[in-house]
Image 1 (tube, rainbow, N blue to C red):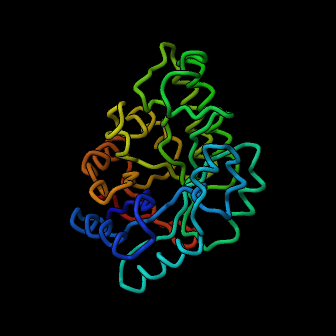
Image 2: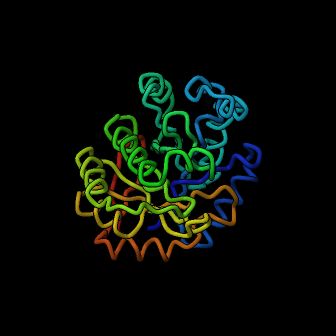
Length: 266
């Protein structure tokens, strides 16, 4: 079975007809189960976690509407899991834990989009000041802390720092090996995500070399598209499956009530 556990429906209403379009695309691409994982900063109940002007502008939704959407989809026979994508913020670990424990998640994705106050997904600016090598090192130090936090089940787009195609000139294999070992020791999964194919970098997250390090360290995997539109659900999964198999994986992990179970990678 294939799954797509990183789907966002936030560009439309929290209504069943909109979600059904995502599921129909998934079913047409041989996906057996989807998981919706809205960004938690969208919800008023989590507005205190990302307490920035950027976050406040996007904190517009009531989480109860989201929960009801998933419940309704399930009542109509859609195999939909309840997920959430959470920004790892070192200074907000306790508040994040209190938010997460209130709701019946099937899984929680932890992602690093911020290095301190720097949102590195925007090119220019801090990139020019910090430099690529330091940016990579700073990103993966935060990523290791996210893995060690105990907050998450899955770590999202593990090498997102490459999103603009910037590459460090120095050797960072040792650093990446440390990252993989931490993830493996914590018993976590990472996404094999096709989202990067639609970004400037034009590459799956994580890179093949990093995926092989995760496999060696014993980290599990899930499959993800990071779809924000129905047409992107399950897109290019033949490529991510091939990458996972080449790294040595033979199964993916599925989740229910934050407990994982392996199924064959096909």
